[in-house]
Image (cartoon, rainbow, N blue to C red; front, side):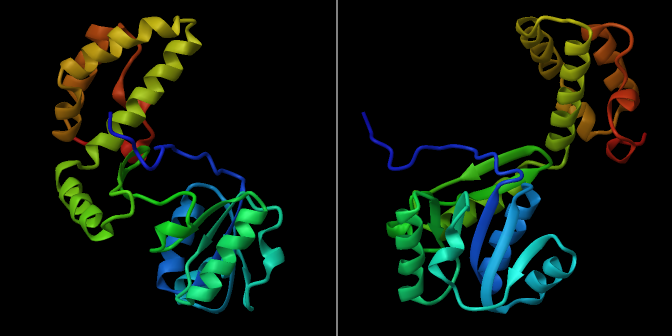
Length: 228
């Protein structure tokens, strides 16, 4: 049996307080992902990139343009260190450890209690690629390959599946009865139909598997509907 160093997990950070120390190019990337996931982000850095400054101007984050303090981590859910100062990064890690916080230091897996994978995102459909911190360059290479293989149709299909599930639950369908229905939709080439934007054929498949009342245009937001 091969032991894994890291336990794969997806964190729900919506509404949670997250701290990023460092407002440069790397910090900006971390901040952007946290904001996309609904976190309440605070950035501490004496110097910040235009991207971070813009997010602060839009009130998407709280910006404290000053040096880091040990007290900055108090009340946070997780902390990310994104500075090029090794001494400071180790101080951030030590402070987070003292407060029992989740902590990631960019490019320093030895002082992290979690690491961040490379991701491919298509709406709510997300794939994570990890090399256990051994080669971020290889993870990036794999991510680029996957991005060419998995197009926006994967996110659209997932949104459609979620809308169907909500409608079935509203109609008092038992959750355990959903699995074979979704398997029939997948086996019916739903993904290929969405990719090819074949709305009529999508509707035919939905009606055949789910019955009347399930139509693509009714289930999906207007900005996510393919046009024939």
